Length: 281
Image 1 (cartoon, rainbow, N blue to C red):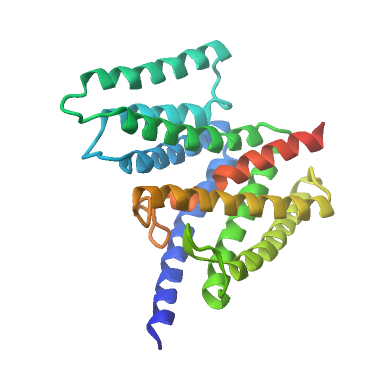
Image 2 (tube, rainbow, N blue to C red):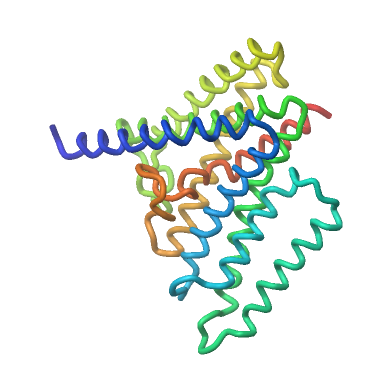
């Protein structure tokens, strides 16, 4: 057995084990209600923001700005589900931004710079604001079904694009950003994203009697989400390339960091949210 095949089997096993543990937790968070789901969004945002903050230029060890950035990301990810008035949410966001700037006043010997602040807070905005759209999707009519639809469609694309690309990839999709992604993998992922979306729709209809999208619109939205997810993946690849690292972290065996697993959802979530609003209008 070649080293290439052994490596792919090893990665496949790690990914399967991670999915076997992680997917049930995600499903439970979605079905148990707004509070567990809010905790899920907050945890993902916090870990992704922390991973990004660790990649800030010239950062050694724990940076106090990082702590504020993590809190800012959690607030942005959860604000649609929090029982707070717009005024209180605005105040909380303002306090965190001001606090992150005040931390710079104690920067001795260049240990904390505005460049680090910009990286950490922009990372929190990137993660928290975009990922927070999944809270908006949850709050829509039939939001639980839409969350399952959007997340599993994106996961289907990611998974099958990876393995199709490994097996048949010849033409690079974006060689300057990610050498491992190919057009063949993208095509395989698109096809399975549509299949996965139709399966989720079928299950939703059988359980609840309806679904916000028709069969044809489900297929179209699945393609849109798959493309958005791929763009989100490439954006994260560009961020990692800027930082000079291969993975954002190592908390998820076979995937890398939390951001490596959830990067596609950063853009597919907003896309699904606004498409669903347009359909409902």
